[in-house]
Length: 119
Image (cartoon, rainbow, N blue to C red; front, top):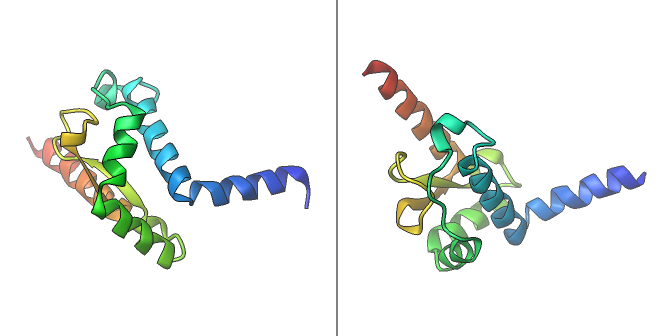
């Protein structure tokens, strides 16, 4: 196996670890509030510190349960733990976040967009 393939395989394994999943999730949140992704929706929103995010997650039974179910599923994307903002007009603060599955988060986002279009 070539070194690029080995590196890609190692990265793929790392992102599926608890530490890798949390790092990727926080980085994605950070990229959104900095305006790199969908700036009209996220840019300038508040975000908790990385340490606060990790401490909040480590004390969250829902993350642990979702993460374990994701592993048992063979890493099905739809079951991947995903951060949901309870109030989508507010940022990524511990009082405004909850862990849900990727599938549920996608469904909620689609419903929210649909409701906004009707208004």
